[in-house]
Amino acid sequence: MTQVRTSPYSISVEEGVDDSEPYYAIKIGHAVFELNVYVERTELPLFSRVPAADWDQRGSVRIGRSAGALAFWSTKGDTVSILVGRDDETWDFAVGIPMQSFVEIMRELGQVSGQKVGPDDFKGG
Image (tube, rainbow, N blue to C red; front, side, top):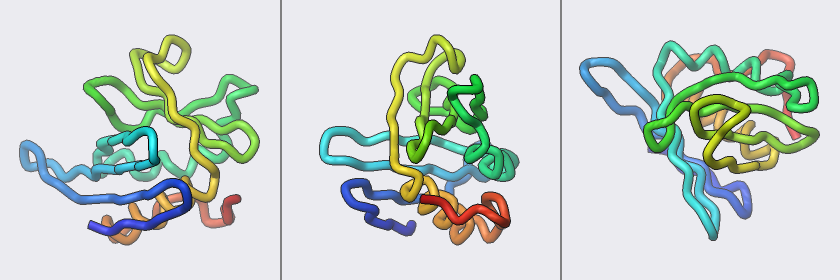
C-alpha cells in the first residue's frame, strides 16, 4: 500500500484479489469523510478519460464501485467529482476532490499496478 497526502486529502491505493481477479482499492481520506472505490484492473485505462469528462457537458466515466453501487467520475473546472449510485444523474452521494488529488490517484494506481494510468499529455492541477 502506498499513501500520499495532498492536503487536506490523503490518497492510498492497495492491490487485492477477489475471486482470482485483481482489483485496486482507492482510499480518499479527509477530516470529515473517507471514500473507498474498488476498481478492476480492466477499468484502469478509463482513468485517461476523466479529465475530459466535463460535467457541464453531461460528461462522466463509470469506473469502479463504492458502497455496493457504481462510481462515476466527472470534472468541473479544477474539481473531480466522484458520484456514487445507480447512475450519474440520480447518485446517492458525491465527493469533490481537487484535480491535484486526482493526479495523485493516477500516479498511485500506476505505481501499484505497474501500468500507465491517465493520459500522456495530462499534467493536472
